[in-house]
Image (cartoon, rainbow over all chains, first blue to last red):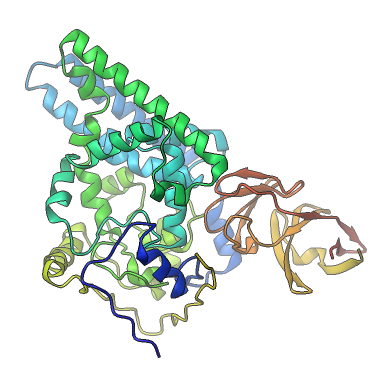
Length: 360
Length: 103
């Protein structure tokens, strides 16, 4: 038996030594544990329909337009603040889950509707829709596999200052703009090139140019009118409205194991109120989503009922989830190898990972 | 190539598929409606995931892992991350059995 020890700090890039390590250990492109679900039940859960997303997107757009209009109307007075508060959360925190679900193509049955919402939400989130499509596919192939997963938010040791600053996008927004500008200039850095096939790279450059052109135009209008308002409506909400997404979204994997082939061990399901679940489109059922990414967001609560006997007990609230995460993250500052081991229920399916024989 | 007796038609629900392993290769056999059947390679061209766990919508098969889509009639990839087409094979129904012409 080969004993593998990890250094205190790991290299989370996709082209560093951890990439080779993931391949050598059979963790790249491996088979993952899935709670067995009867095919008929699963087919029912996977069924696509346009209605729930049409309703929910309509409400979202109405809230965006209404709160944005309020912010513009009352601009210059304190009355604008509550409108911009709602607008920012809708713009950034709610857009992420729309981006995510439509990126999977599961929100609507009609393909073009998924694509339109995906592109719109990608713009709001300052994400290149092509780059992030491939990034998220990799996240599903190699969830929290160091050196392979580009979407590991909780690196060890934790960068607490960056995490806190990003509650208001202070690091992430400049990073996002720089990444888009780089793509617009025709540059795909090595981590992005590792994800995206040659045939898709021109599209990524085109998307980068469109996004940057819009932001330059908005900045120009802001300067020309000598008012922050255009930027407060387009662009800056990605900073001032993102905090709720981090509160809801970071618990997906934060504090849990790296380099395991079982989503029950590296992902977290947290029960939330209906309002938060509307904003987050049920992505709080995160273990379920990773096991069966074809199940649309509106069917995830039903999937949870079907598989919960085989999953760790969900955190009953966000408060409860953060109560276990914060001490863990603080301990990781001095011991990056520390993580939370979820307790599987008695009789849960045995994790017998089939490791991959892929080579780098 | 010989015609292989793959399964009974009733073994496949309408708008569904089954997996067929033959001579060391995996195939997917689709039943769209009544006796309309198709056959393709059984592994997604993106990351070799078994399509048999996927979802058939009209004439499309969606990969269960990354939601890439293919047209089962032509094998053409119609949604990324699937980019490369699936190989397709002739399929027909005779006397309630699904026959496929595979190597």
